[in-house]
Amino acid sequence: MLRPSTTQFEEVAIKPPVEVVAGPSRSAVISCSGELDRSNVRELRRALAVAIGGGSGAVLLDLMNVEFIDAGILSAIVAAAHRLEWRGDRLEVAAGRQPLRLLELTEATQMMRVYRCDPSSPSPFRLPHRETIALTRA
Image (cartoon, rainbow, N blue to C red; front, side, top):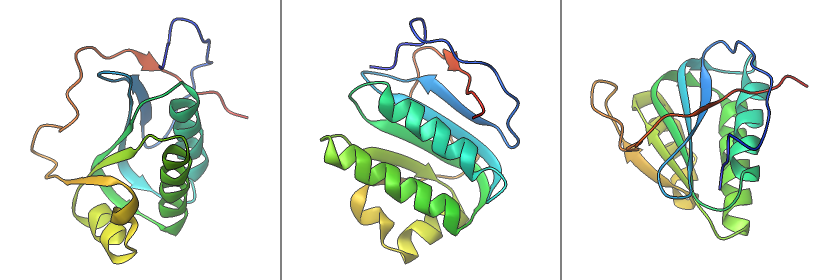
């Protein structure tokens, strides 16, 4: 379980925002926005590592407000899905048009649960509370 109160992280500004929050029932939510590419793949990998390392449960990746992902981001998402599958959990992704299309074209949707979402619709990941966990640069 992700426990923000027991782990200390240094806050950093990430552009575009990649945020890890405590989610419902043994899960963590990573919310992203803007364009995700090689300039911020490191931050996404770090966010996924924090969420996966936080304990057992699904990791929910919210890409609803993401306009573009590149191959490096796709690789990070697939690697996270494999790590979660190995421990018996799953990656769940809410994606808008372009991220969803790339996930479908590469058949990455076979290894994760994917929700087709419109940015104007509410997130399928219901959060009873939002406890932000900041990330640390290496």
